[in-house]
Length: 396
Image (cartoon, rainbow, N blue to C red; front, side, top):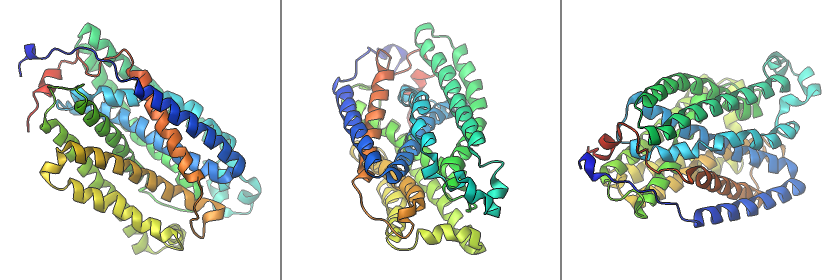
């Protein structure tokens, strides 16, 4: 394909995206509010799972954008708009985090001062685990993410009009600054919101564990949207099987990376056999939680590994859509497995409640509305990027 062959015309996304997004959001929000009245503790723990999922999709998408810039990748340029739109979740985090801060007493053991005073371990962690410093970290991290989202996105969208190549250079510099900051902030975010639910537990690899799941979640949403848009003619006739293969190969790589990190964490704790570390896993291997533990291995690794192993499967649109949805469920299951055993009523085992099904519905609505809002009146392809033609011509 030569440069003159590419003639992109803006095509608005179907109105059904907005309609279904609003429907999911309203139904999910209403049921979520009811859930808080029925069982506040279970509702806030489920809401934390949703919040961690939305952080994964929003922040993970911004990481994928930055990764493209710093690696000077070509193949992903035509699709960069998708993670840029999904990064629009980040400004909403200031609103979404409010319920978690309001009901922090129901979530975190270390917010109970009378408990901290009688616990030498919590007392030792008090300079870090206190609500004042916690809120400062939350506000600082979200502000930093939004700043980089705005700066990188502004340059990218501006380039559609100006075709200025210096904007790419600026985004490369911004991305190079963002990536180490991303690594630090996502680590502390995982420690603050997930690991501190059990403040007696120790793990030095937990931040990397959450990072691996975050990239899988973001990449899965991007892959699902790209394949769907390709089938609907939004990327025709420029996108080939080679592009789809790259998505499949990335998903396959990060599925293996997640399994490696998960197994490494388990192996080190099992081998050391220290009571202050092993109790966390013992909780998840007792009662009905043992079923979830086995299920997580199958859902998050065995099945996606088998589906994506062959080369043809990595470029099969149907299999890519299936495995993208599957891996989104897998990450949700992973977060559920991390969060819910810390709830006082479920330490001994899981019992079903309709509340567990409500918050994913709300999350689907939020993602659909955000994607529609930020994609409105914007090109689905970064037509001003100097590497676009190389991306369209990409072949393995």
